Length: 486
Image (tube, rainbow, N blue to C red; front, side, top):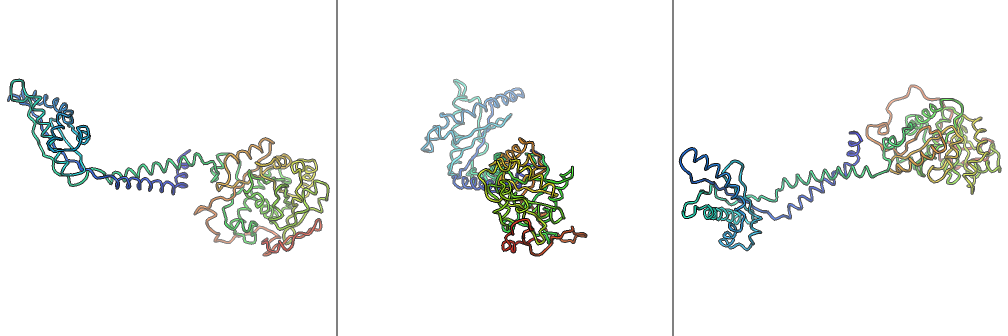
């Protein structure tokens, strides 16, 4: 992953990061509030050596003091020093417990000894610190006295008595909150990275591009009205959905480098990605541009084209392949002028794969390719069945519809691509649906200008309808009166 990937991860997971950071601060604040305050009192002892007055004696005495101070650091927390303190102050603690509250340090290259004690009572803290300093001095005099003489080798004196501390030494509120913030933010970022690495769902175009280098022919934003009104309104030349399908139409034409009729299988990895909506709307747009188009509902398991277009679906592809009806009698026309031809699925057969892979299906496709500029086959999804793979081997190519709002997992898309590769199908490109809208992109605003030219069409009306072309049964007029084919 590069820097842009990390920025995208942080942007997509900013809320989780903020919540975890706030949780870290809250935990730190709670721990701080529950911690009883402790007070630390400090005193300082100066160590000197009883030596001569010459410069050499003073220098030797100073060096001797420095070495002696390091020993006194250990001696300060020994039972010999602390037990008298417990006895004098009447403390109800053991020597070991008292030693844990006493700290002795010696700054490098000095003859100073720093003593500090911590207690929940500030006055008691200062009292213990002074008592430990006095006990240490007495003990040093005892152990450093010259044998047979009363004069000790060293001279210890208190430089500064311990005073009663005014503020607690712990808990340190600011430090704890800052630490909670840092730890919380780090955990939040770690959570976002781990969540992204473990999450196999496809959420963006970049996720698709990491799986395949196939071109993206079209991308459609996640419009809330798309489910309620799946068919586009083409009389509004600046409707974002209609314009997106015009771009898809243009890109599809550019994939036909050899010219001639295009027979395109429109499928998806799993159900629910919008392949039927894409097939129908693309067919409408191709017909709008003047192309001869036929949309075939090749999903003989869960057909949706008839319902989407509001047409009769009892007679269609299955009845043609089974020899029950001729092609001419199965073709229905859609639109006010019948500019779009449709072959619905017909009755659901018990053997869809056998019908779609039959020689009759191959002959039907060749016949349709001789009559139309574009043949669109709305096929079943790739993952559950082999039907689209069978059709892909007979057609010009496959257009794979992929939903990018987290509905599809990477493994499912990869499985669909592998299915196409296994039959040497030509993948024309991908169509991305449910693309999350972002502020400042094409989908975030409406056009505010007029086009200089308008594409020619004979299908631009305020109301649409379906009717029989004289080649098949009449379509459901009442259902189509509510459709908006513009």
